[in-house]
Length: 622
Image 1 (cartoon, rainbow, N blue to C red):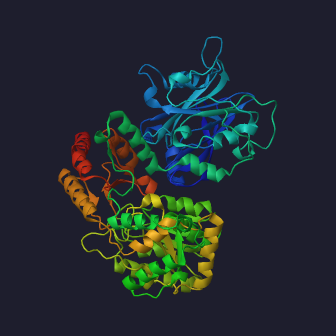
Image 2 (cartoon, rainbow, N blue to C red):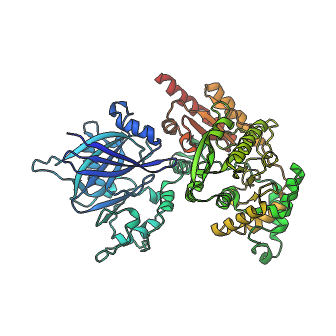
Image 3 (tube, helix red, strand yellow):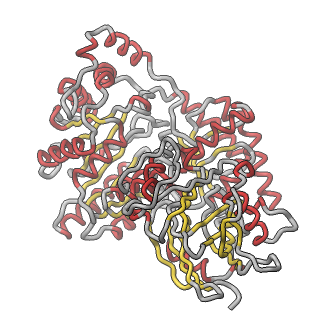
């Protein structure tokens, strides 16, 4: 055997990136285990892993898995997790044309860490073996293929930290690891490599459990602390694909000028808040500040809740009161509260793919299982047959989002009726309650007279989560609500659970000033004219260039088919034309990108040359 042999594959965690633990047997029969991440599901990952390198795409990253006889290391890098071996990743593009992958790995390892391969008297590595596997490069490369170099390593010099951007080498005693990580959670620091020398191969949760010898000097920001929550740490280290792209855009604008970067990544309203909001705020600021900025009841100001209830009653012919509403810090808080109110660990929550990525995080963070249910691939309406097949005795809730992020479709009355019928049937068959959580921050942003059905009218066990972030252009003010209709089974108990979940999560007393602003602006219409104009410019421009997309009925996103099956690769290629398009992988499907047209019309118009160049590039590839 002259190459490492794969002996075991174990999926460690599942998410929009899946984490795997791989065990290889080296030619000297030593077993080496390390962790990697990929967007691919387990069966697809194992298939590609075992099919041989001929079937893998080109190598986009090199990963060095090294070990010494006594020590092990911890590497933290963006999109990577604590590893039980030293693992250094870098772009394959750093390789000089005349270098082998192994030579390149040795050079980069030495520069970044001060470690090099153990070598014999001739200077050759004692052993350094290569293999290629599918995986996701933490450096944002495209084709999900990584060359792995296994080698025994030793410290030979101080690292040349100036040789590699955003690289820092840190060695800390075990007791200081967590404090250091806790002090380095901003996006740039997550991008920095932290190589932490420890004394034994232990899981991350055990790092701080034992004392070590006299501590070495540590950064002033590092404070020793007990072991942190590993799940929360991984969520923080993993980050959001959307916000990563947005951060890249900010940095890129600093480099080449804002007018030269076409950032369609973030759903941040580009339309100013209505003047009524400004006027209401100014009036309120003349009131007694001690009262204006004081606490409200945990579930929100009763007067505000009644005003919101009255507005809903006028619009939808209902009879809600303040006791049906819980004011929150936006729709995100509303959904998180709702899940904690009705779900228990082990329950299953169904989401309709493509879906907002944070759904999975909220579901899994409370110990529930996120079940993806693929929407109709032509219309992107909910497919009732697929939904029915996804329901099990463990199903506790289904989340729907209309108008939809990321596609922009509005679920029709027929779709909502079909969903309601599926859930009614499942409730009767299983003799259990299944909640329908309707996420509606884009309810008012619709075009061409599209109608958004009022979901509780069709399904009794509906919980509505709403935010004024989009309709009134107030994303940073964090104001929304949870509605628990009277039609809900045991609705008073569910409302009490909503209040309790808000209390346990710390979502009490939503921003007091903007509760009062909402009371004065609750019926102010959304200004959708600018978004309608942007939609027309973008759709016409891409249609003329030959792009395929789903005509949006609402929200401010365009769902565009990527020009190759690999959405991440397409997104990466678009970045070369300064187009920042969110790949569909993070939304639970492949082959598409999301374009947020909540930008200036000028940005959309100026981007068309870049879209044309991108299309031409693919056309020439054939």
